[in-house]
Image (cartoon, rainbow, N blue to C red; front, side, top):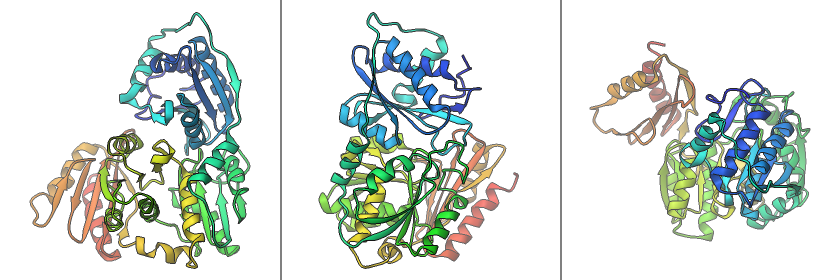
Length: 451
């Protein structure tokens, strides 16, 4: 069995196959998962993406889970939000085999308890890690069984019951990046009156066209060109496991995920005025403004899905959005769904005569830098240097909810350390492009002074 010390991350299991993650590790994780979730004598659900290693890893995990006494429902090829749907609908814990947007040589396991409640390092993953590392085996008196269930149609029907799309007929380009949106989008879009222009729907875990990571601008190049070439109303780009969605407008211009967060928040607040809405601390300042203007209560959180989901559960928030293209819905078990976010955009656009750029104009109020990564030798020391350069200045407010955030009336920035690499991540925003550029460059000068 491959060593396991490096593959257990804050929110999931992820590593190189087979050097770090092999079938023996997957089998051990399956047995430990059953033990930690107390599902011996019960059931769990398992899905997988299109990576070449996913079938073998998923089968090995199921074998370990069965040995530990759980019945395993295999849903086969699935997006991560399709696995969350199955966990929520069936009321059982789940495991999704995917490495999301990572390159082909990687794979991983996203775990959840019943009703898609996340399993992270503080909520069971550390126990699973320790059980696997100890080599302890769990053998039940009654081993479980494996059954198979196709939930794709039920998943598509459920999403459209939450967000019906009516109005004018749209032309939509969808770039699946050879990932799992190539599996889910045909089922969802077959139920819509749209003209679908598919891109890279062939399931191929070697990602022959581009990485399935739409947060990187180069991976949107093909989609932007196709939207302009076919005169589409919008483009949608999904990551490898299709739990994240990014938009391109009718001009082929990328849409800031904060604008989509604000749009969805406004739509959800029409259903439940006064409800809390979650946004992480590096979404645009426009997001809490718009939430308040639409009668909602903005709730600011750290970056990361475990914080978003926990805060949603604590506050009863109706919706949550992140800069990274993750969108969370209370009516979807507080889980994230890229496809559900896409349907909100389609429904909003179909209900108006405006182009997408016009529809989103009121939600795009400030100039943003996007996330800028800098490799530094000592992230902690560099972060202190950044804080020292701003501490004591008048008119500034500093906080440490997640890294360092500095607020001014005309701008703000946040600098956070990566959990896994010697990186600092900078996000900056200003009242206009010149203001943003000045504060961005000032902070980068300090970050990169000694790098």
